Image (cartoon, rainbow, N blue to C red):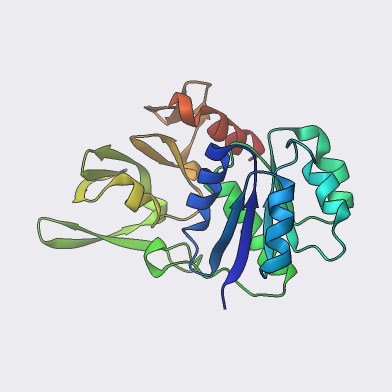
Length: 236
């Protein structure tokens, strides 16, 4: 049975990002998206909701005020641009507190935490996303031959329009696939740093506000990815 989710946020871009993250999980289903707490309240009256992604700073009623008003709320993951509400939010026994923009790596940790709270042993994701921790490799097709690549051997991947070039310490393999689709097949420790690059965070040796170093290799950090990348790397 799928976990029924609702997103309440007054920012359309923030809603779109959470929708994209949720779409990667086969056992999560969004039943509604709302732009304020009043809309959310109406949905909760008419739909079964198991998990609520809730913004804090919203017009009319804040996410915290809304949550306090509910007599039997679903599980909640706060999504906000403000750190200062963290202590108060945890007093409300929320599952997690995510800072915007929410990276997929951080989102994945929150979802795992949610399923642990409902006594589910593991997160079920689509078979093609390969996020099962027991999976150590991937097969990619190049010139009609399928190559086995260990995730730990991948340094980074780069987009070549409709192709992806996978860099390991010993080889470069080019496969016909969009980088956004390839990204879904990687474990959570891979990080999208740029529209054209994904890096293995376990191989990072240094980073600045502008690029990531994998030994002598420098990978750029895109402007639109910067805040999310910095959040992940500084958290680690």
